[in-house]
Image (cartoon, rainbow, N blue to C red; front, side):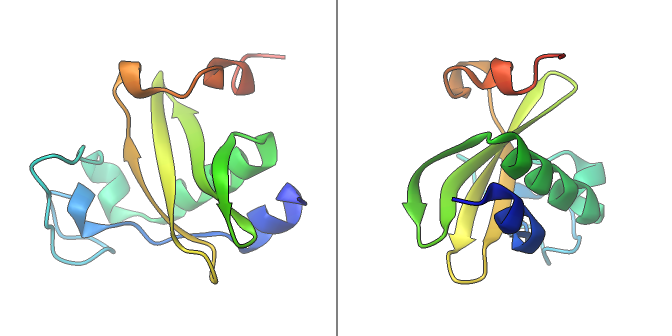
Length: 115
């Protein structure tokens, strides 16, 4: 699979289920069992979209594949791993949320280790 091509077309759309303030994803609908995205990310979708594309380019992806896209992508920022979850396999749209340390996928640290 050509991850560079996927990174060029993948989009971050967010989800109100991981927000506690109104933003680009609409009215907040934070689920009791969902992690809450940092508020600054709830207001600017360009940052998580850049993270999504970087994760794809690094190969920080996880199966299963749904159509052309991996169901999961992971991005590390300031010691936090954010998981992107495919929500539309035709359009390559993802939502995202922070993971707890014990939820990190095995080996993800190697994708973000300094060269």
